[in-house]
Length: 603
Image (cartoon, rainbow, N blue to C red; front, top):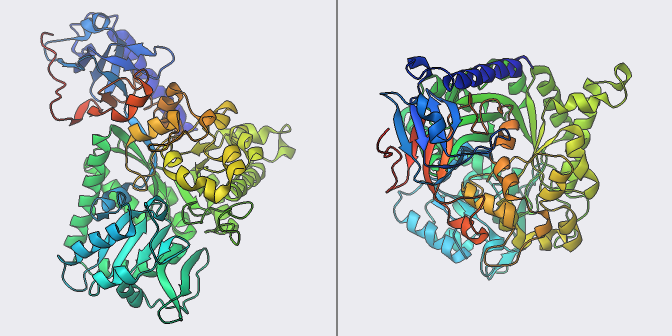
């Protein structure tokens, strides 16, 4: 609360300075703008002044917003004048849920997301193996068996067996991560390194897919590792990485950070909500922030063992007003897996796998322990929950912790709900809900951090997994949540999906499958809501609305310039919208080829 109050005072002082700048004589250097942006269609996402055509920047903050004529007194001899060329300008977009290091690492490995068949993936691995020394690992990410044009000829529940893959990579271990990140595929070499056989038991919260080999008649591990079982092979790969020299590991890590940052800026992302980094990674990010080596603002959820969290939460906590490019003030846990690999935890069995209700990947007591740590250290709690059972369990857990913390016996009846809303705890994904649980988000102030792009991306198999009734009542129910009073934080879950806010924005308002029908269009967002979900609501989701989320005097001068107006262009043209420029803290961080901001002519 004290941090929020101080942030408010900072924002108020900047706002007052901006007002004064428009009232005093322009010959005072303190009041002059460093940059004036003109010739723009500005959507400020500020209810006090929703539209403007010009914007003034002083240092890394917005000084004033209005028309060019209104801001003319702020232009001095040293003021730069940028022209948007009549283009659409919004606050810098906030990626509300992604994996920053994972995004960078995904750009260092095989991209399997465009593969239309298992054979295409085999060809990619074969090509990679031809260029590597024996024993070197081949890693990739992005495959999804439900998105292949045809299933493999010899499959188990739609998943391929490892044999063809093993044949083209006999001297290299292979580890290929599912698009969701909740399953992995390994070849025979990798499984042997990990000691995996048909007798290997399933770990808690995971499963090794096994089937009888038609050629031998014996039970075999087919190469698919669901949820926590993926750690069996991942651990061996990690050990191989640890054998690299310190210099090589550091270079590889920094390259991943650079690649992730560049991908964000090219897509108009100025702030990234990182959905889970270890204490060790956070320490490295803090070093980069101190050295002014971060080009995208990171808001990080700490994800580590409860023992590590208890030991380090107080030390690593970082507020945005103290470190403009790094905030650490949330904890991340996961309670279930993903729908694609049948890992989402459901209230009743899958329609297409009647023997399963999914997987509970972390125990309720362990998440309760993390929740109490969050209360003690004043951290937000963010729990990954996709299935309707998972979401109910998390909502029930939150309610227990809230009532325990704000006992009704000491306050008026129901006051715990009011107090709980100040915590802004989150559920990450909240994809499939029981109708009775939808209003509970707003009632307790729980923020649904949902990814618009997951709807059309997953819709190709949602009806298979859930059936029509469950899908209609509770799948990606943005409209129901917003109408009940909840505020949605949008994103892409990169690298699960490509980090394209345009694609997620379009999915949020159109809910259209690629080349196909709409998916329960009655649950769509309006365009202003979709914009808020990527700006102001996302900023609120991290207690940063006093610094980001709208183009308001006093806030960071983070903005994105688009090739067309996302709020008014024909809906079918939204996907073709390009990022022309990304500005972070008043500095041009990205410009598209052929577009220049600093070309406004006469001041």
